Amino acid sequence: MNSVTLSQFRNRQSDYIAAAQRGPVEITSRGARRRAVVVSPEFFDRAIAALEDQADISAAAEARKESRISHAEVMAEFGL
Image (cartoon, rainbow, N blue to C red):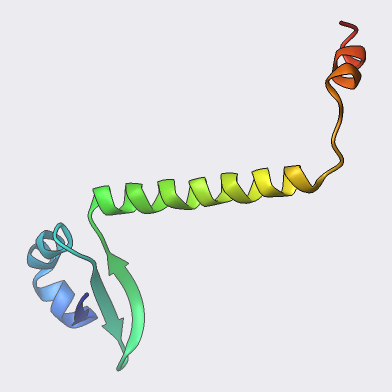
């Protein structure tokens, strides 16, 4: 990951935004303290999709832990 100071980023924003299309760019401030990470829109979209997928997987695992209902019980509940 490319790492730059906030001052460097301010001075050459377009260069670092272009670099973020190839890989994340970490922006630091006050020494080594990480302030932000600039990524491409595609990287961001993939990361969000992966987080959403993980949330769905976790929710499905939780749902499987709950008590099971038979097909007949579901049919009866809906009056079918």
